[in-house]
Length: 206
Image 1 (tube, rainbow, N blue to C red):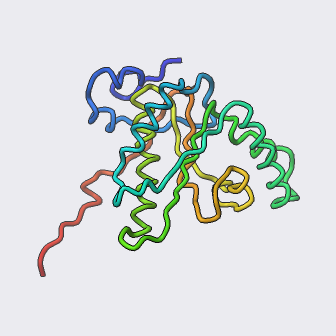
Image 2: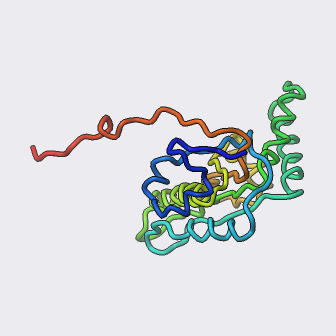
Image 3: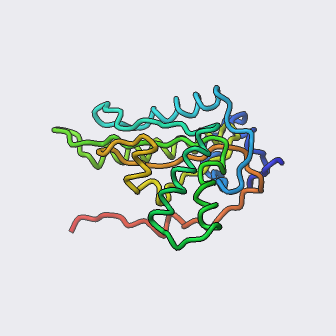
């Protein structure tokens, strides 16, 4: 299926027209629930991650890292999530368990962006966290430019210490985002966006 954006161009051509502002103006997320094969090729994934590490990074700390979840690891991690969900919600039925079990199987590949922000004598920890968020957003832009469907999510498993440990996240680390990558099986529908003018105030000297 060819997904047509609101400017009439299929996503695989966004990187061919040399118009980054048009790409930014039309970027939207694909639903991870409606993703299918194929996922990004190894070369595409390398390109996406190479773009991601070029985000602003005060102090050159590289306060983020990546965990790739693909292939059989998706179902194996889904079993871990299901077991944990049973412990947390023993009254939930099969429908709920099936949703949790298939969480990482919805897309061919997921990149877990891990924030490694830590106290620093010169660099505020908050700025390190923001840098990890910029990594996630840059991944979305790069994936869109390549015609790869993408969505940035978290969900409960990104905050539960048992599941984050199973994913490979350290006690002092946090999941900044789970970036699902694949091919959208449905047309991308835009949502209402705010007018920038409605968000602006201008500072004036008292």
